[in-house]
Amino acid sequence: MSGTLDRQALAALIAKDIAPGSYVNLGIGQPTLVSDYLTADQDVTLHTENGLLGMGPAAQGDEIDEDLINAGKIPVTEVPGASFFHHADSFAMMRGGHLDVCVMGAFQVSATGDLANWHTGAPDAIPAVGGAMDLAVGAKETWVMMNLFTKTGEAKIVPECTYPLTGPGCVSRVYTECAVFLIDDQGVTVRETFGTTVEELAERMSVPLRSLD
Amino acid sequence: MPKHFLDDVDEAVACVRDGDTVLIGGFGKAGQPVELIEALLRTDVKDLTVVNNNAGNGDEGLALLIAEGHVQKMICSFPRQSDSWHFDKAYREGRVQLEVVPQGSLAERIRAGGAGIGGFFTPTGYGTPLAEGKETRVIDGRGYVLETPIRGDVALIKALRADRAGNLVYRKTARNFGPIMATAAAHTVAQVHDVVPLGGLDPENIATPGIFVQTIVTVGGPVAPETTPEHEEEQ
Image (cartoon, rainbow over all chains, first blue to last red; front, side, top):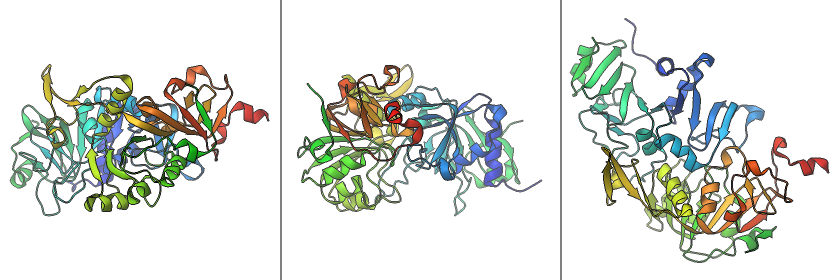
């Protein structure tokens, strides 16, 4: 058995799980890596909240254009077949359930799919939510890509989120370096593990885990 | 009412009064009406409520409007960024109030404001701290939050080009909040690269019909070659 997955391998796994022809929004940070592993055959169309469907890779050199950026305000490119639209249309795509998949990072995910990823709840923190709440409840599938454990070793899949929620009951999958978790009405199911076992994970986590088989 | 076509950004922002709600377009630098914001900085208007996706970046534009005391309240989705130090400082010192709104609710509240809609129920924010104090309702088994419209006294937006009817076209992701903000203000000021004669824009491609625009101010500046209008190429 090999060890845990690194971020690149995890991004590749998520990319492979995206159904052909999907419209997808990749969150800022780690989830952006997923785009590197999407293949032309998959025919996936990337959405960015600031008004572009058909986003291409990051812009290089002469391609850099300050009128063409992504949600992280990084210069990007447009692919043939791309479209531009205003913010209300862009969020209609999200909230109206038109995006097939979004992939986001998280501070915590609960056993019932609650997502916490916008605010640590620290009293002196300045709140900033951006498009996270719209995306979390709007996409047909909300997947999380994160490390399973905090730096101090606590599992980030929890019975109930202690951080302020981004959206209740919206996460259906969690991709981590140790395992892929599926979340539905039955609770948390381990789809596959990397360099560990369901039993070992169960010892380190405080939510009940089911195996796929 | 006749539209105002100006070349002077200072004249263009003279309509802004103390206490106004000002909708300012842009997402990051894309679509940010930099010249209009700089003109506003040269005025002494104060107590503004500013609606923008962010709360200023670096040492320019909206960040300076906040730093120099023109703004009493920000309505935005994402104030905290690596370079939002002017907002951060003013907020922590209690000099500026903050209303954080999920980005899609911000956009839809502005759209509602411009469309004469008195409010709407959105699933965004339901069950989160941002729904506290707001009316909620369960519709067909799903929870929703009541959000109210946002209207501005003035909108300051950036478009690529206008024609003499005030119709606007934008460029790439610089469109963002421009079209909805144009609808939602009593007085919309659009800064554009250039103005073309009637018939110079394809009616099929107008993103903002001129009915939503009161003042157009030409600022010029560089523009990518593929968007150079035909009449310029002919000269």
